[in-house]
Amino acid sequence: MPLLIAIDGPAASGKGTLAKRLAGHYGLPHLDTGLLYRAVALALLDAGRSLDDHAAAAQAARTLDAERLDDPRLRERAMGEAASRVSAVPEVRAGLLTWQRRFATDPQGAVLDGRDIGTVVCPDAGVKLFITASSEERARRRHLELAGRGETADFAVILADIEARDARDASRAAAPLRMADDAIRLDTTDLDANAAFDEARAIVERARGSMS
Ligand code: CDP
Ligand code: CDP
Image (cartoon, rainbow, N blue to C red; front, side, top):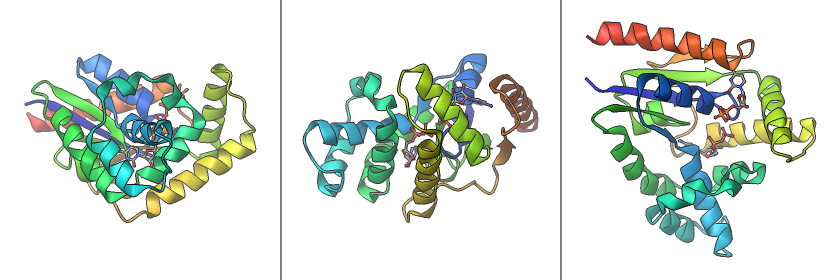
């Protein structure tokens, strides 16, 4: 049976890092679904459109080009905020759902990370993880990460950004950020990336044991 791993959680919880490592360990393809929403936002901005132009956003989601996912600008801090705005538009979510589902049906299995993977995109995933950490710890991680890329910003500004984005993602009507009833919560506030990977791998192994 293909191994499908769904990973959700708030901003900078470490879900992307964990997803990549699990995918490497199990030899599975990995999709960072946040990049899709970031790419829709960037396509709008590049076309000189407003992020509030829902028709243009829906069109950008339907016609998204995979090559755009390599654009380094997608990783900029402002793009996380812009992605959160377009991701509340139901037609954008619908446009990206087909793409994500196709990826998830890879016969080998797959790892997807985002906000609604366990609840909407892959409700039947064999393993669902919900990664959390305190907002201060997440802001600390993002601050370090941005500094490493030469993008400087105040810790307080990053913390406020992260909290505002989580609140928007959790309160929107369309596929809000929430833990699936059958997901396992992993709080990584006091875990480094290696320790989080070890815990997650143990969870995956237990789930695989009960699948076979
Ligand atoms: O994908 P998401 O926004 O949830 O977070 P990420 O980009 O995977 O991780 C944000 C930063 O936290 C990265 O620099 C990681 O190395 C670091 N980190 C982590 O991923 N996991 C931990 N348990 C601790 C730190
Ligand atoms: O890395 P970080 O957690 O900061 O952000 P991301 O995962 O790249 O996601 C950027 C934004 O896209 C989020 O704040 C969400 O609004 C949206 N998103 C979503 O709505 N659904 C997903 N499956 C993934 C991302």
